[in-house]
Image (cartoon, rainbow, N blue to C red; front, side, top):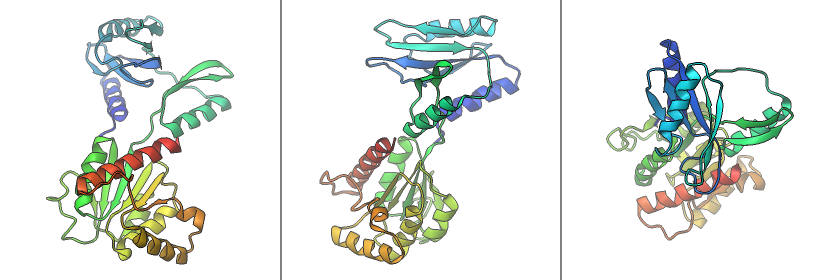
Length: 287
């Protein structure tokens, strides 16, 4: 699944390579129940082709007219729409580069951690910081039934999913269509995937030989969510084994075990829902 912002930027670059003029409309401020959040983009080329959305359709016509004017030489313009639209947009037909002051860099880093475009006060006045983070990633240890439900759910939520399982009978294309697979041993796969602060890991195999090596690597990374399936008794044994690998109590506390919110989930799909909910809560809390 290609991240929406990434797809728009790739299209913008393709238009520019082909010699087309391009204007970008960006939502810079919203209030109330705005149809699109700050950072949402609409790109328009000089032939009238458009991609993206800034309003869900109610003001696109007016935005496109301003975009065409920018490409014909008009200056960038801040557009404000009424209460029914509840948003403000900046339309710009230029592509500008420049060094940012230190306070802008700091504010941008904070916005990136929150994964939220926003307007901030800087030494140069008010500035809109538009965030283009890489896609979120989910690494699933174990090509089991729960993984079959979890992988497509996570993909719909914008995650790049990789299922890791060296057992060839489990890790098949027929069981996981359109999902990236790794047949490496979990510690090798995890080292190669290099989890970062936009990565989640869920261990599902119930097999210490598979779960523990992957968890060991994850605990030494900046992964924002680490979880493992199993009963409380199983989890207690897991923690003891990880202590023997050198992990202290503060590090072990990062593991959500048993994985998922306690919603009484029974079926693989329900357990996958509980894991997605807990993972989403951890992601937003980390911001």
